[in-house]
Amino acid sequence: MNRRFTGWILILAILIVLPLQAYAATPQETVEAGVNKVLKTLSDPAFKTKPKDQKITAISTEIESVFDFEELSKRTLGREWKNFSAEQQTEFVKLFKELLQGVYADRLLAYSDQKVIYDKEIMIKEGQAEVQSYLQTSDGTKIPLFYRMTDKSGSWKVYDMVIEGVSMVKNYRTQFREILSNGSADKLLEILREKTKKS
Amino acid sequence: MRIDPVRKALYVVAVAALLGVFCSPAAAGEIRNEPIELPGLLLAQQSRESANDQLATPRFELLAQAAQAKEDEDDKKDEDADDDDEYADDDVKLISDPLIKVNNDFYILNDRLYFWVLKPVARGYGFIIPQELRAAVRNVFYNIRFPVRFINCLLQGKGQKASYEFGRFFINTTAGFLGIANVAAKYPHLQPSKEDLGQTFAVWGIGYGPYLMLPFFGPSSVRDGLGLVGDTFLDPLFWLSPDTRTSIEIRAGETVNDTSLRIGEYEALKAAALDPYVMIRNAWVQNRNKLIAE
Image: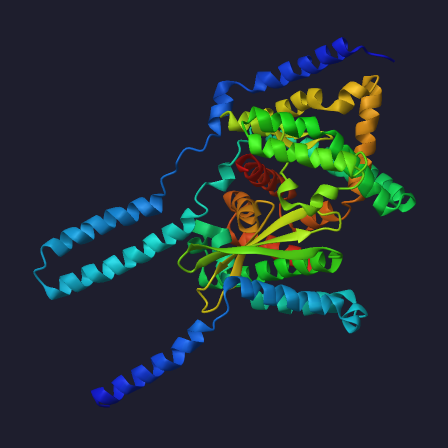
């Protein structure tokens, strides 16, 4: 293939990609779209009549599109991530995802009258952002709920949620460290398997 | 049984002194966050230096390429270390927990108290009393404790926040009729975060001290436990109640009322945790750090 031809392809490719990038959703737009989708599902009359496990599955799928569970798992394990074999890592991501989806779907089902307010988005650094939102209850109390996001996967995805100053990733990390300091990666996976089976 | 305020004060001072025994400067200094040098980062820097040494004498292109590859790898290591940096404050050691055995026993006690006593009582209470009324009761309690927050704002030198606290108290006491309605909720700046003596101590540079799981009161630390005792004196309800028993009864009633509005929260947190004790300890410290920083 001659050089000039390659050049033209390159220019064409850039021309196609440029507008796409300009229209890529911002972190806040991504969160808003995800949250609105979940809220819409929750208020759907057909959804309300479904059995609970089907509800959880439906919401879990919606949560999955907004979260980067691999990044989330990596960060939660931190340095320990490298001590896991490839298979262990894959299983860990899968189990941790299941656990969190179950937990949050359950919480969302209990969600009642809160209003979601989007305050602002902050760029932490290149490729990392924080979307600051608040849940407002009927009596006016505002609960800060911040989403930490990364664009490593090509679009903005959530890798951590910080509720009232409590980072979910950090919180699970201390729990995992505690287990890993007394046991192996297998032990941790076993506990996770047991936990996801129950919920 | 009537206890005069002086004896009541003496009693509280005695408890404070007991807590103070644990709060030796050494214990308080232990958890001050020392900057932790990331071994990974250090390693990456060292190997980068050696890579630069190799670059300084580029005799073979191959060697230079190898050095470049190494440098790329080091860049990646740095990147990883940078990513870790966001969470570098070794959260496992956010607070020291030398009393873990006792704390764990108290955690189990609190857990059982919740499921066996508090939750059933709060459920029954919530069944009889409508939610609006329970929310009103909570608001009144919050409003009446205004001096605790106001004085602690002043002790921390947060004049602006103190004025917002006062504004909130004034509006809710008048327009909100003794705090029943949170009228001030309409004004975003009149939502100051809670302040207490534990936070004041923190602002003054005192560390957490060992972690404490207090029976009935839940997670705390030596510093914040002492703060809790001190705050009692700033609490109008303490001075308004004729004796200790009434004061405890009011507290119990308030706890039942609050719990009735939050049933399900603890259950969800516990269900999500692999180690509820560690989860609560860490969540408490993270939340506390945020409150202190505000």
